[in-house]
Amino acid sequence: MVSSGYLQAVMLLLAVQLLCFRPSDAEQEAGTVIPAESRPCVDCHAFEFMQRALQDLKKTAFNLDARTETLVLRAERRALCDCMPTNTLR
Image (tube, rainbow, N blue to C red; front, side, top):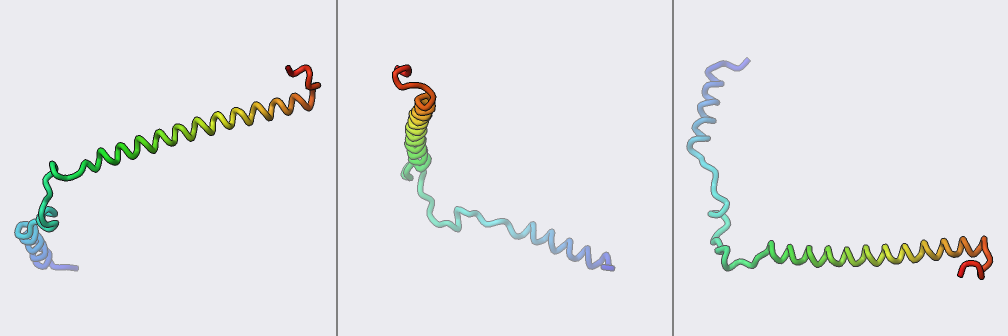
């Protein structure tokens, strides 16, 4: 078993480390900081890109929906044509 004196010494060292060593700032290590006014608006560009992508997806979905509806109507008409004479469909 570990002696209580040893545990006290370890706890004291940990406390000293926590008090003496503070975490380093990420901005200091990164170098110079570019002011927000001179940076491009990354969020704005990302938002515009996502808006265009969403519009393209909506158009594609609409086209697929319309195409699917057309194909279903054709299939239904062919199924009816197989059962009925052509002149009764019009």
